[in-house]
Image 1 (cartoon, rainbow, N blue to C red):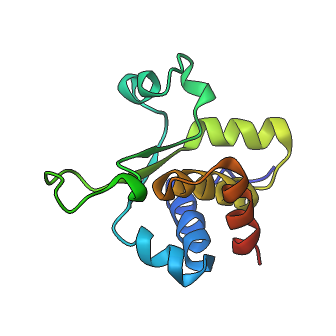
Image 2: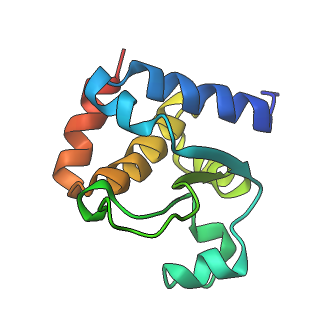
Length: 130
């Protein structure tokens, strides 16, 4: 029976994904906080209009780079959260491998930081593959 990836393994896989991104993207992600949580909070779910905690695998919280200004008030750093239990369930249901699934979610959420469209995110994901 395969072992279930730990929170530390999720973090390592997410950081490895970021490390494989082109430098121009990695540089802008240096101040983004990476969190591994078991599930999204009720507030996080509400922020994206989702009611079932099993339906959210990742979330970007922050102001996308294109919307930031030097004149903005100081605020909390942007964050990417991965939700471990929904990701584990998605792995089981879809058969997608651990690293591939983590890579997909991290890149999708990082894409929100850059203000990217879904098409842009797919291209960025392709660039991060081995």
